[in-house]
Structures are given as C-alpha cells and as structure tokens.
Length: 281
Image (cartoon, rainbow, N blue to C red; front, side):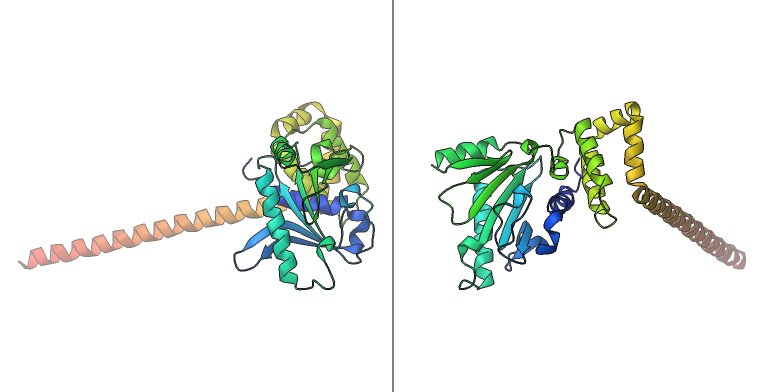
C-alpha cells in the first residue's frame, strides 16, 4: 500500500467534486511557502470572490482556500490544525495584499476519510466549538482567524461524492458502483481524473477488487469498458517497458560476452608471451 499515490487521487477527486464550477476556480497543487519549502496540499482560488460553489464541500470557500489532505494512514490532530493555520497565515503574509484581501478572504479545509476522534476531543478541550453543517462536514465556529472546516469523507452523503469517498481503505462494492456510475457521465477531459481515483481505490482495496473480479463479472466488464482507452495505453506502456528491459538485458549479456572474449584474448596473448620467453631462455 506504500506505492499508492493518495495525493494525486485527492487532487483528482477535488477537481471532479468541484467540476460544476471549474471555470470559476484555479487549482494549485502542493503550494510552496518561502525558502523553507513548507507546502500545503492544495490551493483553490476563486476567480470571482462572490461566486457561490454548488458542491457543499466548497460552501465556505472565499477567495483563497488552503486545503490539507490526510490519507487513511495519516494522523489528524490539533497539531495538524495549527500547522495548516501557520501555513495559511504565512500565505496571507507573503501575498502582501492586505488592503484588498483581509483575513476573511482566506479559508482552511482539512480532509480525512475517517473521523479524527482525537482532534475533536482536543477541540472540545480547547473550548473550540464546531458544528456539522452537512453530513461529514464540520465547521469550527470560533477562536480561529480564518473560517475553517473539517471534512470526513467517509461520512459525506452518498449522492455526489463518489470521488472523495473513493479515497478509502474501507472499500465496498457500492463505492465501486458509485465510481462507475459517475464515470459514465464524464467527458474525455475528466475521465483521466476518474481513472486516478479508481487507481487509488484499487490499490487500497486489493482484496475487495479480487473478490469482485471473481464474483462480479458484470461490474468488472463495466470497469474495463469505462477505462478501455486507459487500459490499452497501459498495455502499450507495459509492452514498451518489457521490450526496453529485454533490450537492456541483451545489451548487458553482449557486453559481458565482449568483456569475457577480451579477457580470454588478453590471457592468450600473455600466455604466448610467457611461452616465447621460456623458449628464449
């Protein structure tokens, strides 16, 4: 599971979740801060500040929206919240546009698959209130300079959130079907994003996908049909990699044979010199 590219899956999922308003949004991945190379996962900028995002995960969005994603193996606690707070404050400072955009133009979003129980306990212990504004979406209501929400993707409603809900180790056949159903409606531009999400889901749920392959031939056929172009391209890439590997091995064998022949020729020449020297004596 260590080779799963959760970050790529997350960015793709966010683009698909906010697809209805993509013309009004700019996505900036892994935004770096100052010379220390600190970075947050995703920055979403609204081209027009007053545009209302239709998907509820973007309901609190303002002009600059800093988003931190934690994959199912990552920890999310009060320390992580303060880290994102420091990143957001630093980003505000580095923009140097305080007259045009004050602190209310910035929002913070932390996203995780399962409930961050420790974080919610720590919020309560710090007298910080939060409210569940939508299923799986919790807004911290005070003591922070920026509007902040915590999104628990596993608790988002089923309708409209197949992409973020697909970033999980707790996959089900229903989630696979949800991704399939949503992918059917995508155009060529967005289909590769769905493929990235599906790759993450597959890598994180190998046992489930193996069971589906054995038992659900219809579902497997649907997956294959949806990603036929991508599968064909992958086969071409694998074939090219195999041919390149075979060529490299053949060259390596040829080099070894050439080196061996050179060594043999050298030894024969040395032996001849020795015999000639011995005969002269």
